[in-house]
Amino acid sequence: MTIFTKIIKGEIPSYKIAENEQFYAFLDIFPLVKGHVLVVPKIETDQFFDLDDVTLASILIFAKPIAKAIEKAFPCNRCGISVVGLEVPHAHIHLVPINDSDDINFTRQKLKLSQEELTEVQNKIIAAL
Image 1 (spheres, helix red, strand yellow):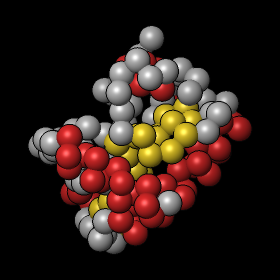
Image 2 (image 1 turned 45 degrees about the vertical axis):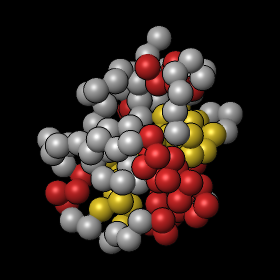
Image 3 (image 1 turned 120 degrees about the vertical axis):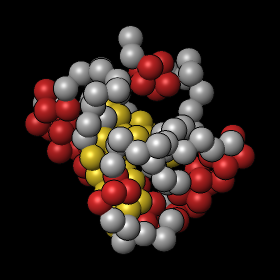
């Protein structure tokens, strides 16, 4: 069982942004920038492109309003999307407010936000949904 499955099941706390029967979106607790959200399918699949076609298409449809909310909540040129998948063997996408391509560079130092800051980020995104 991956850490994401434990988060989805509520065994590990998270800063939930949105959820439906197929997907769960929550804040990355070590974000590249404020507003960095992870979107994961509830079905545990390691590789993103091993998801069935319907799930693969549906994850983007689920992520779209979240991406728009991130753009409203955090001044940026756009909400970038990235599939890396090396950290956790559970398919997921990163939604990151970006102003240039370096904002989505995963080799950069991650932020260490307090619980209060994470809650503030969560509330800003949810309010913009």
